[in-house]
Image (cartoon, rainbow, N blue to C red; front, side, top):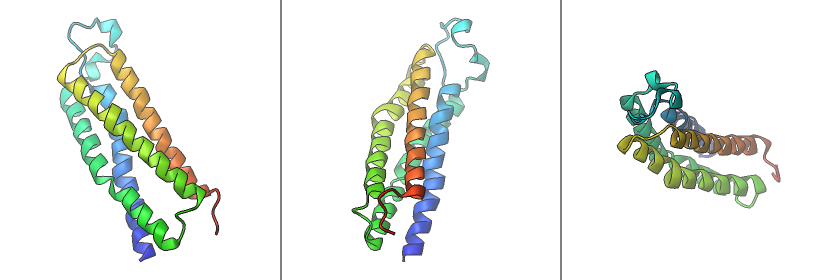
Length: 153
């Protein structure tokens, strides 16, 4: 049972969290900017593709929902192993909640807004920074899973 939970947890993290991390990072590059924005304000104007940006937004949303398997399997696995009280598990759960909150309250709504109402490139740079924080949180969670500070074995 533990092996199955671990495999589900790790594979879901790779596919769903990894997929949403890539999609959030790529979205700002392809998101449309307003036609009235001067070319020097959006030097990568030729790369812009609303179709690709819309696909990245759908991946971000869809993989975020499917990614709920990751914390569920992780919590069940930690409970089965008797590790729920360990520091690395607690920190990982807090960081996972922070990443989910960032995704749901900031990244997905800003992506939707950028698709609905193209504007200047500055909000897309802010969105790119938020995607970086989102990815950094997941990198810290991976380190916690490997190093396991406060582990009892």
